[in-house]
Image (cartoon, rainbow, N blue to C red; front, side):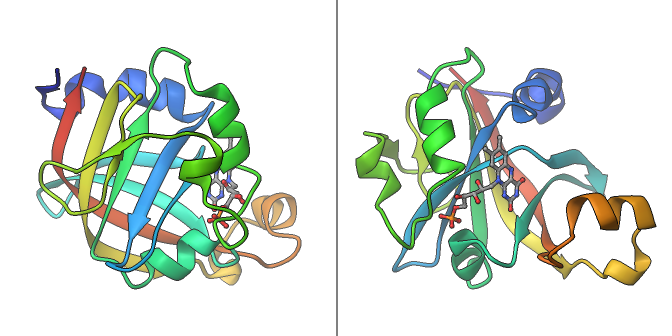
Length: 167
Ligand SMILES: Cc1cc2nc3c(=O)[nH]c(=O)nc-3n(C[C@H](O)[C@H](O)[C@H](O)COP(=O)(O)O)c2cc1C
C-alpha cells in the first residue's frame, strides 16, 4: 500500500540511499530498461520540484531516455535488492534483460507510463523538463580528471516530480 507524500518529506532518506544505489527506470514506448544510479539531486527550479539524474552517454539507458518524456526513480530504503542494484549497476540492458535476470517485479507508474520497481519502498515519478549534456570545459579540472578521464560525460536530465510516494 503506497502513501503519496510531499517529496521534501522523503528526500533525506532518499538521498541517503541514493549514495548506495537506486533504480532509474526509463522507457521510450518500445524499450524499457533500468540501471543503478548513485548521483542526482533534488530541489526547486522553475517554481517546480525537480529530481535531476545524470546518465553517461555510453549507457543503454541513455539511448532510451534521450527519446523519453519521463523517468521513474525507485528507492530500496530498507537496504533490500542489493544483488539487483549490483547487477543493474554493472550489466547493460543491451546485453541482458535486467528485469528477468534480477527477478525484478514492476508495476505501472501512477502518473507516467514508465514502470516502477515493485520491491522498493519509495518512488518518484518525473516528467523530463530539461536535458543538458555536460561541457567538460566548464567543469573544475580536478573533477574532470577524476570522473571523466575517458570523456564519457553525463547528460543531466531534470525531471519535474509529478508523484512521490512511499510504502
Ligand atoms: C552504485 C552505482 C551507482 C551508479 N550511478 C550511476 C549514475 O548516476 N549515472 C550513470 O550514468 N551510471 C551510474 N552507474 C553505472 C551504471 O549503472 C552501469 O553502467 C549500468 O550497467 C548501465 O546500464 P545500461 O547500459 O543498461 O544503461 C552506477 C553504478 C553503480 C554500481
